[in-house]
Amino acid sequence: MTIKLDNVGIRYIVGDFRNLGLKDFVIQKIRGQYKAKEFWAVEDVSLELSQGDFLGIVGNNGAGKSTLLKAIAGIMAPTKGHMEVNGTIAALLELGAGFDGEMTVRENTFLRGALMGYTRAFMDETYPEIIGFSELEEFQDRPFRQLSSGMKSRLAFSIACLVRPDILILDEVLSVGDGAFKQKSEARMKEVIATGATTIFVSHSLAQTRQLCNKVLWLDKGKQMAFGEANNVIDMYESFMK
Image 1 (cartoon, rainbow, N blue to C red):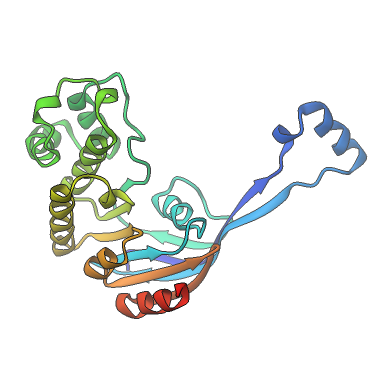
Image 2 (image 1 turned 90 degrees about the horizontal axis):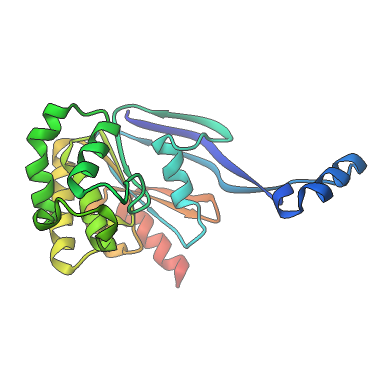
C-alpha cells in the first residue's frame, strides 16, 4: 500500500478579519458577534492505492480535486481523518510554481532536482535527458520568465517524470502543449506506469483518463461520489453529467 486515505476532510476558514478590517474585527470579537465561516473543500474521502496504480480524479470545477492533491503532496494537512503516503513524491500542481523567473532554465532544472532531494551527480547525469524531452535545448541559458506557459509546463513535466519518483502527482499538466507533446507525454505516462510508480492524475479529458488510469475517484462539491475501476466510475460520472 502506497497511499491510504481514511475519511479525510479539508476545511477552509472564510470570512476572517482581513475581509472586515482590523477595527471592525476587534469590535465584533469584543461584542461576541464575530463568527468565522467554515468551508469543507474535501469531506470524508477514503481510498487505497498500491504501487503501480494510476488514479484519475474527476469532477466539476470546485469539486476539491486540487485541494486533495495538495494534501497528498504534503503541502497542506487534512483537518480530519487519517492519511498515509509512503515514498518520494514529485508533484506538478501549478505550472511554473517553484521556479525562479530570473534564473536560467538550466539553473532552475538543477534547483528543482535539489528540492526533490536528488544529488548533483544524479542531476548531471539526468539533465541532458530532461532538457531533451522538454525540447528546450535552445533555451537552456535564457531566464525562466521568458518561457511561454507551454514551455514552462514541458520543463516541469520533464523534471517530474524523468527523475523516477515513487509517487507522481499531475494536475492538468497533460492538457498543456501542442498535439505532438501531448502524445509524447502520454507515452511517457505509460512508461511511468511500467516502472511501478503510483500516479495521481487530474484531467478534464475523460478519454485521456480512461486511457491512462486503472482507478478513478469522482468528487462532487468535496464529497466522494465513487471510487473504483476506471471505466465503471467514468460511466457513472458521464451518466450523472447528462
